[in-house]
Length: 412
Image (cartoon, rainbow, N blue to C red; front, side):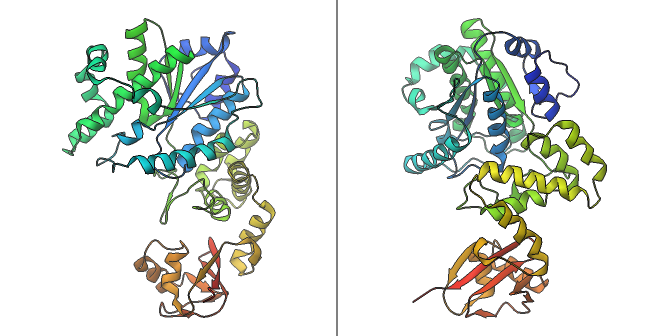
């Protein structure tokens, strides 16, 4: 976060106070852009490397929401081309290559979900959804090298954190991945020339790539473009937010149920509660700051419930918050409204450790057995003392005080 930097623009001041801004290539140019009367176009990109967006994407989605409400024209780029390459940013190894069919399927899933978060019509400044495969696939390799090769310094590219850190660890970095920054920079130039886009938004791990785009536009056109990064979502303990022992927290209700999604936010570290409220709720900052004195005390739970309710209804507008809150409250007392918990069907006689894995309550059989051995699993409120227990009737299966599913026996 850029902290004490003062902006003349009320929009930027609000974003900075809420913690959205981390690095900016040109503070004054950005402030002037938002203080002027010209049309503001910004863009953010996402590669379709998974079939759903996850918690890590919520930060830029919420930022785009705020900017669109302020009159900015957003462009969302789906990386149909760059997604086939893989960004080396901070990764220990090369990304697994995805074939065209998977890229296409992921693109459709992500596109469908984005349309629920961002306004692409019915407003004066509708967002635009583009796929960079539309222009990158038309590139002639020799012409591209001739036109853009002289504008990129290999010395600077080797100094990028994402590249230098991989090389310092003596880990493989393919020439394919090395090209990613060039193509992302070309995306920015293309949008600058064809859509009047002067601002790129991305995570802090995209900073080097954004600088490449700003530099390319300056060298190619002599004009100023701006890159603005957001902080990576991390916990007070320094871990990347959005991961659990069972994997990522997805925005697709078929991958992460609304109840589990709500529980994730309800159970964040007390120290993260007000930071996340500033980012993901519309509550006044002064009111949020009042909760700071409750960190480590039971009163902070009220803030975490407000946070969980706000984010859940934003991501899952049809979720029954009353039922979710009631089930969460009753979870410790083993009382549940069966109609409002996720249901899994299993074969008659399936062992409980296997069911824990099938119901996404444990990532592996080994982990499931560890949960049972640690007295962390209950059936209808009674502790399970053996992983050889077989399920023969409908029941409620719970893990700790955070997760519960309704188990039904599949009809033969």
